[in-house]
Length: 445
Image (cartoon, rainbow, N blue to C red; front, side, top):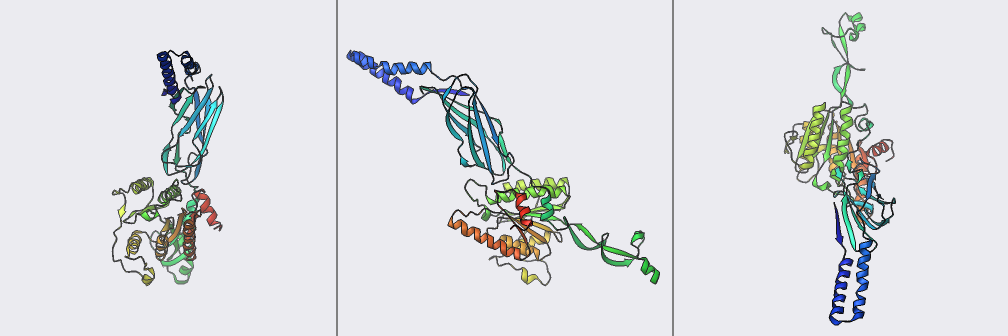
């Protein structure tokens, strides 16, 4: 809707014209009356050069409509004068989504447009998780005399929203899980290629697995069993503790949002490959687990679990792991698994989590590594023969002295954990996630 308003300049001219004319009439002074001609003439000029209705076309484009969180998206707004009159003064303000911060440039511009001319507004915003809609573009046009202005909001064509939901390349799952593409050896006999044991022949055993050499020597029918390789279950554990609600800059998404984004992007290829997949969330006060499973129903349950994690409203979809002071008996490594975490909260949480994990789980921990929590989780669960990988979004900054110290501390924690044999992938949110994974796995740490 277009609104026409008188400017302060018009109001002042009207006041001056009336005042000077009144003084001239009251005093009978012709010179004063003649002086009133100037503001009156300007008023007439303003009416003759009044700006007609704004006739412009607005088109918005972005360089990436589906960016990863933390990346910078360049927005280009093009305003074209489609009318037959010149717009001497035009102010343009794009409707930037309220949730997104402007990283560089400005969504504002003042310009003049002749018929057929175009003006471009270019600026950058920092992507955050979710779908963000652009608002109307605000226009303020004035004529040559600037006595009136026309204001209107117009919806731009082209890009109207940014969805921060970019997918990771499918090979990511192959690299983050076990080296045998999601499979681990078991202690069960069956089909396979690696010898496991010889047992007495049973009715229904395949003829091809009979040990004919032994039958020739001893006259006994025996069956050869091989070590089975089964699909390794995968659990993605997301660190959502209050301690990681930290952002690199005020306009950047915080670490917990980056972790949720990265975890969700890992799930699609996992389900595509048919992996037995589950998710877990540690909020600091509780740990929620959706046990590994396959299929479309499990994929729908994981989607619901992430929605609940973001809203911190848990339903029956996940299992709340009880924080207990005791644990079942373990092997002789028990003393090596104790954690120095003050009141023992982390220890009890990990004990409860490990009890609910299937044997030899591929666990992917997503955490910004701002404290010792990722190390505690990785080393503890690794001691139970789980395969642990840490995917860590980097929200530290080297722009300040304090940021440099935090960044160095994080690098040292990562280095120490890698020395224990745990794989750690450090991801700079300004780079594609898949690129960070590939670069790390190629040894370019």
